[in-house]
Amino acid sequence: MSSQFDLTDPENEALLGSCRQAKRIAVLTGAGISAESGLATFRGDGGIWSKFKPEELANMEAFLRNPERVWEWYQYRRDVLDSANPNPGHFALAAWERICPEFSLITQNVDGLHQAAGSTRVIELHGNLKVNRCQSCGAESDTEEIRFEGKVPKCGCGGMLRPGVVWFGEMLPEAAIREAFQSSQTCDLFLVVGTSAVVYPAASLPEIAKESGAAVLEINPEPTPITRWADFSIRGNAGDILPQLVEAISIKL
Ligand code: BJW
Ligand code: ZN
Image (cartoon, rainbow, N blue to C red; front, side, top):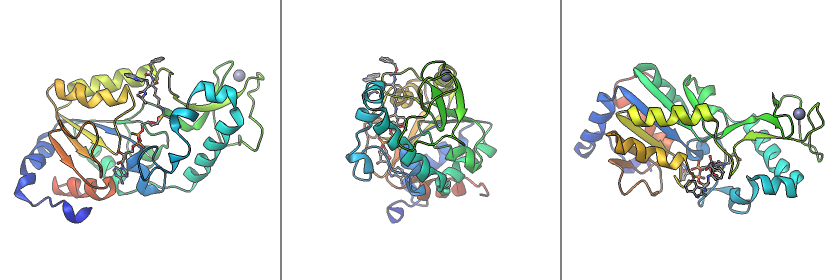
């Protein structure tokens, strides 16, 4: 992939100009940015969930029908996450935040790897994998002592615990979605990184940014619904492209 993208190519001058001039940047990331950290994406050829459809597991009906199956999937993912580290794509975004006057990092990911890389303004649209929430009383706790080992973990109140993430049909955290819309409406550059852009309302953010006058830059090895109208589209891996971009706009990583 890297060989196909050359920042010194005059064709990329306008793209670099937009990146250099941008004072207000919003970024939307998806599972693809964590693929190079060893975390599976949800969809597509690289998605090991081709046999576990997120639409079939990440919803309340599935949880109520078979909470053990849903918990098994999440415990497996927590175990994988425990040994995962941020990759150069995450670090590049953290470095970009440090030199940009206004930088909002909106993520659909629940893995916390942006924060681990040093990003400080992270808007988590779909919650966090390491949080548990009680079905009955809504109390939230971290996952340190709680593991799924065949039995659905319970809250002190007796209610079933569930992962603190946003499933299909559920509302996104109010503050997160408000801030995400606001950043999308007011940025001058909007980056879309590693998302298939098919899950709403996150998928509407690049369009909102475009309608509000921002340039939209997509980074993804595959085309998405955004590709045909994005101002710039780079085909490649986030961990390869983002560090090149950040270096090219004169930031020491
Ligand atoms: C690389 C790479 C590399 C690979 N570098 N790139 C129309 C309008 C509005 C809403 C809807 C609508 N129709 C249906 C809805 C509702 C629904 C929805 O959008 N459904 C769609 C399937 C159509 N949305 C919802 O229900 C949301 N809530 C909502 O709308 O509330 C209002 C409401 C309430 C009640 C009733 C009705 C409405 C909630 C959505 C929650 C999504 N939750 C999940 C699970 C989270 C927890 C968990 O992790 O288990 O979120 S599903 C899953 O998809 C996860 C992700 O965050 C999300 C997006 O996936 P993402 O990140 O894009 O990953 P992939 O795998 O799809 O793509 C990876 C990409 O990376 C690919 O493009 C690769 O090419 C690329 N890639 N390697 C860069 N190295
Ligand atoms: Zn409870």
